[in-house]
Length: 397
Image 1 (cartoon, helix red, strand yellow):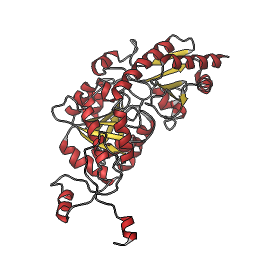
Image 2 (image 1 turned 180 degrees about the horizontal axis):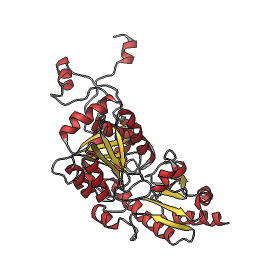
Image 3 (image 1 turned 90 degrees about the vertical axis):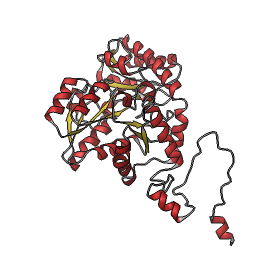
Image 4 (image 1 turned 90 degrees about the horizontal axis):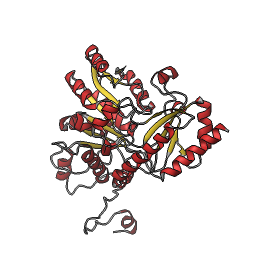
């Protein structure tokens, strides 16, 4: 063998004891021992990997672990896909579920990107219907009036107003009228809430957020209860539309998941302390947090959430200008358009995550110009509160 060939060919990988951690498999394709084996893997008669867009050991391990977490307690485990982003997970799911003439029933206080995606699906003949997703009578009325609704798509808690919908009740309604329920569980994670156990058909995640937990990568996930639907509908869209995740981000998420239960407990504890503190502050008009006893959806929250999560939002009495001064005075908390990191992160929905939503629609769903979203981190809560207090004091000055 010539030197140039020796340099380009990889040696056979020696087999030792298995690694303690799931390895990062950085490969775009996989080798077949024979053409017969390759044919069998391609036709699905034997398991194996083909090409990175179809699957990868690291990617599949992340998908399986997320599915196991979401489906824990089900008689049959969920089936997972690891995606390039949370938006890829949502798009893959909605395209797989909906066709021309069908409609999506959703709500207005929805992440701006998700809302814009659903609006853009109109170009494919897929309509949108909005409802107060917490009002089960209104939801049933919409399902009755529009038999073409194929999907009920919701967030609970919602982004950024932290409203909570009764998943078990809506799942029953959706199924009665021939629709499927898809839930974005990014805010809660399966540590706090398991929509599949409450009757949801599919759960989507931006794993960029709490599952990664450290702000080091972009990825998403889909978990489906029904194997036939998973194989025949979701997988083909996932593979052909190019929404598959990559091994590096999968490896980061796998490591993040190891501390997810501990982090969600700390996020929840800190967020409750911060919410209670803000509630008593003279410059704060209102606070939205599932853990507060006066939350309008208290009964629902008590039924389906084990903790209350790390997300809250609040409004300052001075409106947008006071909000801008407050955010510019923060020194410890970080102003950035994401959430779910170990650090405390601040975002202004009206000009950032929801800037693409028409103002009148945004206002009608409680996303005011004065609303500030806080992703409470796992730092010492006194440091978070001290920074908020000094920023509010400087704002007044």
